[in-house]
Image (cartoon, rainbow, N blue to C red; front, side, top):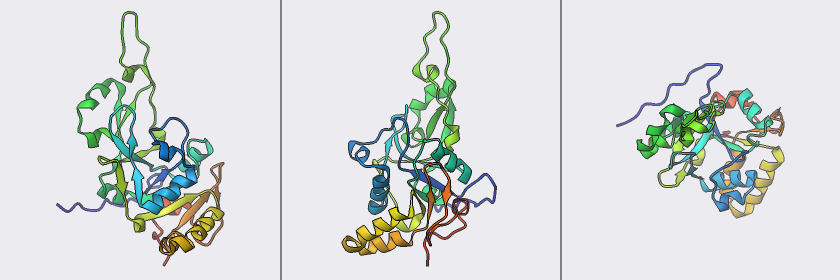
Length: 239
């Protein structure tokens, strides 16, 4: 079976591109090796190896790689609120769809009990949506009814990783999110002797610079406006 490409929709609140941010606040299921790297180091490792490491998703016993389809304003908000840092790598939704990815499935807490019976690839995209509940006298509630879980603002996509790793093709990178132009310049210089081919590829990638307060910084010859990049209106690599 040959699956058609996803339709591109010109909608003000809809993107054709999603971003994986390498730094986030709160708990995570990262391995010790991944946790030992800072956010920029994780981004470099992902791009250099062409590999993501899937991590355990909350409450589903399944692993996946997470992305956000947040708009430009939404991504700026996520960074300014400290939920993510300005280090990330973006891909088209269509490419991730070919790798088995898709939007998360929001499941009410009072329907969550059946999720454990689902196939692993579907469980990996399940997210509990529930404001929490208080048990009445003589009542005992399972964990998925007691605790609060509200993550719709992340506008999440996931790619299940049944074999732990998710490999990707470098040319499919839509753009990078970086904290400063100096970060990309230093990386290219670092690779120029050890891996000149990779250095050339990194130097040709489009990128967007976002500061810690979530504001887009305009600088660099390969800098592009994030709103255009998220819409997929720019080609992946400079010619």
